[in-house]
View 1 (cartoon, rainbow, N blue to C red):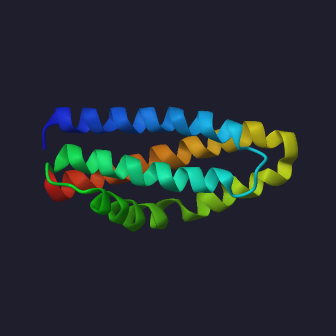
View 2: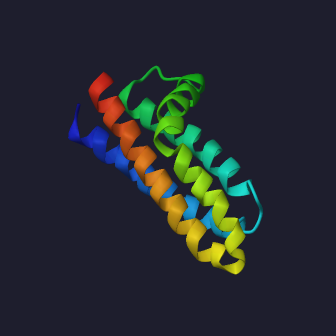
View 3: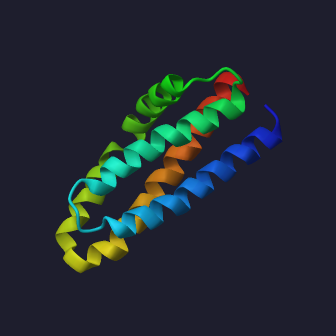
Length: 119
């Protein structure tokens, strides 16, 4: 594994974390919307990180990787994310913070997995 692979992967994670915060702000009061957006974003992030480590990495591989790592590592956090809808206007503060944690943790888990498997 080269350090540049890890750096490139972390840049993807950081960019996706920022994007998650922005998107979740816009969907804070819509039940289920943030989770749907994050699940899609996780698959895209997994694909891009996987393709940094392995040149022949398909979108299906990325979706499988996100499902394998993502569901186990962030399922409870996604439930917490959606539960914050009950906070009403407070959801505009709580949801983006929780989304940032979810995306960052998942991204780091994907990087660790890719480091171990292909690095």
